[in-house]
Structure formats: C-alpha cells, structure tokens
Image (cartoon, rainbow, N blue to C red; front, top):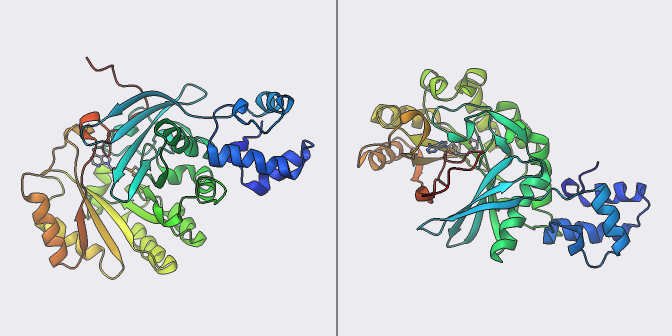
Length: 343
Ligand code: SAH
C-alpha cells in the first residue's frame, strides 16, 4: 500500500495517475496531506465521498495521535504520540522569540546506545516514515492552532540511521505547497554516522548539521558512545570539515557536560584543538540530572569556565538553555513508552 503522505507531488501524481486519477486530484490531495495535515480523509471536503472512501480503503493516513500532552513551567510542551501500529514517539515544542520550533523523532527508540540517553533504552523498535515525522508537526500545529516555522531532528532516534525517510521528510517539509519551512530553519542532529554526513554534504541541503560529540578523545568517546568504535574521531572530524567546506555552513557540535567525566579545562583545550581550522560552533549542554547512566551536571561555575577555556583556545561556544526539564522533555529524556501517570 503506497503511503501517499510520504510522497512528493510528482510521485503522488505518478501514483494516482496509475490509479486513474487526474493531475488536479493529486494537487488537491497533496494540499490536504502536506499543507493542512489532515488525519482523516473525510476532512478533504473537495473530494467526492466515493473518492474519500476509496482513499480510506487503499491509502490509510498514518497520522500521529496525541495520547498525552504535558506543559512545562517554562512553556515547553511535550507530546506523546501513538502511531498506527501502537508504537510511540515523543515530540517537544519549544517557544523562542523567533517563533515555535518542534523537536521531532525519527525512530521509535534508537539503536545507538549512548550511555547517557534515555531514548536508547529498549533499542530501536522501528523507523518512522516521512509522513510520520511530518505528522508530528501537523498534529501540534492543529492542536495549538499555531504555525511551526522551525524544526529540529533531535528527538528520539538517530536520523542518519533512517536516511531515506529523513531525506523525504526534508524535501517535503520545505515544499512551499506543504509545511513551507525554510531549509535554514531545520537542524539535524547525529551521533556521528559518517556515511550519512557525507550524503548530506553531497546533497547540499542547506540545513544546520549538529554533531553530538561529548568527548574530545576516542577512548572517552567510545566509552560513552558506541558509535565511536565504528566511526572514530579520525573519520568523523574530517567528514564534518568536508561538510563545512562543501556547504559553506558552520557545523554545530553538541557537548553534554558530565561532571568529572568530560568537563575539565584540559578537555576543553583538547576539544578546541580538535575543531581548529574550520567553521565550528560548540553547544554546551549541562547533562540533564534525570539522565540515564547516573551522570551529574558540572559543579556550579564549571560550565561557564569550560566555555571560557574553549573561547580562549579559539573555539566558538554557547551554553544551551535547558527547557522542559520538569516534564522530562529536555535532551536525552525522551523515551518510547508512556511514563507512569503523574500521581
Ligand atoms: N541521535 C541524534 C539525535 C538525538 S539529539 C544524536 O545523537 O545527535 C539529542 C541530543 O541530546 C544529542 O546531542 C544527545 O547526545 C543529547 N543528549 C542525550 N542524552 C542527554 C542527556 N541526558 N543530557 C543532555 N543531552 C543529552
């Protein structure tokens, strides 16, 4: 069964043509699926009842159903979405001065096994389709009657382990007849899957690439992030350099500060050295205290000192404001099952 919600307009035209529908129907259906994000064919009021019934039977809409919604003290909203086969993912809506940004999930779970991240507990249950990644944005826009102008692939899952669906998602999200999100307003975060980064560079998509680094040397990085054994720093950093060179975009590096593990001044200097010579930016995230693995955030003052050491050694760095911590919506706190109801 072809998933119409994951198709570009030319693909949709082709598919529907083979099913005997004219081009203008494809344009109407694209509009309903991609711009308005309908969850049921009955909402598509300019299609005949017979056509809606046929579409329902032949092309079910794989939308995301909000099963739980939590609002943080800081205004961050976390959604737990149920997918058509019962799997769950979470999305987090962040409010900034420049507008709304939705952090979306690309997989139910994650196979990468980072020591500090809750999303990986239980492994990767399955990849999401492009329609399911887009569906998270549609569901939130419709629920809150807002327009989401920014999106970050930083929720649950490793986007580059689901590359074909993610590339489809990117193509559809920027479509001016769909969500019409500017490519400059999209970020993708990876734990460092080198071939995927090369592919993104080759495609010159104009999005912001974030790479989760978390350690300045192979030994420590491998102990925190199993992906480093497959793609060590000697391969990762050159591919990031290449990405910056080819796309002309600065690469962003996430560095979760773990007390006593990766937060020393020597490690800050080593990190700056590693990133020398190409446009890079370090995003420091004091690890969330509720994180997996029993890690603690740095002692008071250490985060600011780490940033200063980085800057002195020539690396641009900012400290990421942590949002939504009280509802477990912060980085590394998303999981693929419903938490027990709050008492
Ligand atoms: N798989 C992708 C997307 C996840 S994005 C990636 O690894 O980049 C989520 C970001 O939050 C990543 O940088 C991840 O390493 C980071 N993170 C995970 N657990 C965290 C925690 N407990 N505290 C702070 N950041 C965490």
